[in-house]
Image (cartoon, rainbow, N blue to C red; front, top):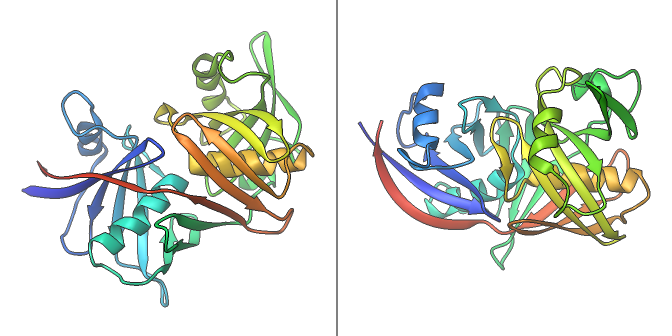
Amino acid sequence: MKLPFSKMHGLGNDFMVLDGISQAIELTPAIIRRFASRQFGIGFNQLLLVEPPQQPDIDFKYRIFNADGSEVEQCGNGARCFAKFVRDKGLTIKSRIAVETRNGIIHLHVEPSGMVRVDMGVPILEPVKIPFKAEKQAVDYIIRDGEDSFEIGAVSMGNPHAIMLVDDINLFPVRQVGRRIEAHQDFPQRVNAGFLQVVHAKFAKLRVYERGVGETLACGTGACAAHVYGRLKGLLGPEAEIKLPGGSLHLSWAGEGANVYMTGPATHVFEGVIDL
């Protein structure tokens, strides 16, 4: 079977995007891993699958698979690419799109400039819902790994994030520490590890080691979680630019109980066909 696909990226966080509305698609973890291979397949951080909604008054269903074949709840950069994909493919003409995800409903707004603003919902801070093995909201929490300990904040933006403040993200051993935090026993579903360097109240730098992927050039939910953590620590303001290796995102969060809004680009790279 010949399977058409689009290759897209959001600040270098790259995706294979599939139309599961116009064609029936059956995916397995083994197929996804084959597609994800940068040597023998297409190569991507995540695969995005567009499906018909299962709820009334919703435009689409959105499924996200990591390169290792695991399905995850949310992907902020992917959400922006999703919005561009369904409009480019003529699946909708709406500029405001309601999308069903594994973690709930999100709303996407394609601006006249082509930038996409995503309502990422209210951040989850309650440990049991993250999930995270802690007794109370973990703005400052010490996790121990052997003889080492790491001070992190735990936030879920539909998927779990552990944020750690660092002095210089260019010098910090992100991959070595990220690998250890990702698999830490206090996170039963693993966790995305973010390393945040706050420059001033309106600007910060971030690197993210994503579960099931490794370090990526950008992580939308990671940027949202980092902004929330920075706000709770009193280091970032309600509006901030967060610069990732692949580029910058604009974040907005009024405070606890409010939704997080993320604005950034979505880029089409090429169209292709692969054997399923």
